[in-house]
Image 1 (tube, rainbow, N blue to C red):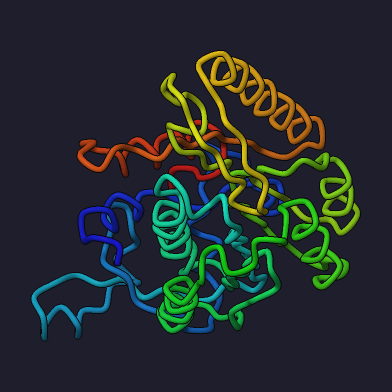
Image 2 (cartoon, rainbow, N blue to C red):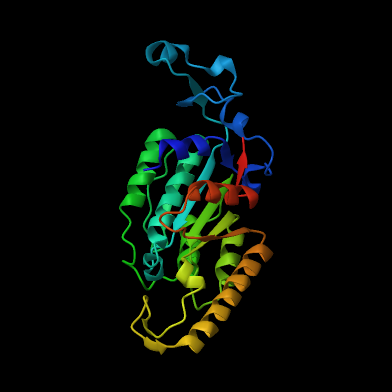
Amino acid sequence: MVSRETRGLLDRYALAGTALGFEPGERLAREAGHSVEFHDFREYRAGDELRYVDWRAYARTGRLYTRVHRAERSLRLHLLLDTSGSMALGGKDAFAAGLAKQLAYLAQSEAVVQVHDLAGGTSLPAAGLPGLARAWEFIDGLRWAASPDVAPGAGLRSFAARAGLVSGRALVVVISDLFDPAPLRPALATLKARGFDVSFLQTVAPEDLNPAEGLYDLQNSEGHARLLAGPAEVRAYRSAVRRFVDRTRSAVLRSGYRHLLLEVPAPAAADSEKEVILALLRHGIIMRR
């Protein structure tokens, strides 16, 4: 679940991206608020127009709620989660699931939300609180490392082929460590050809980037190869993984998409959710309402 404190923080923000026709810093709230079709309720926020306050609900509960109406043009949000073997290591699976739930919550008042795993599983598209419940249920049911042979690049190309050409506004958010020996460029080109506006949240564990020096007996989590590694190999690995992250970021940015490297926080890290939300804001993935 997403805590009440986190929901209160997320309520200050909205999705951003070129698919919206808005850039970070511009207001999106009116996009969801001026169609005649009733959509949902949400808690009152400072700045909401009083004509949309549900005073009957206030009389019953003593709390202020705002009526939200569906926009004439509806945004579609696709959340893509990588469930391959490497994502089951270092707490990346739990972090990715929590992040996806937060993004689904943030989008539910303005977008039709659909969640996918890169192995081909998908939730039914839906909006509002029923859609949020459906998205969270799908995320809770994901089987991490159940399809270890589906690499991120192949999974993204398969998703783009299934989705077809996009008409209207569609945002795609990819949550993956993007660990793939194959280049990402073919997948980026396929997504571009389909007209998607994409944000890549490259999710890594601390030990992915900076493992401690020592003697390791390693096994490929997405295969069966084994390798003995000592301090020299660890140092070489650190340099190689940094180069990989830099190449990946450069390829994503050259394609005109957004990239954010997110490191799984330590379990006892204070304000980690707030820091992630602020990082999403700085990189133009979300914006202030």
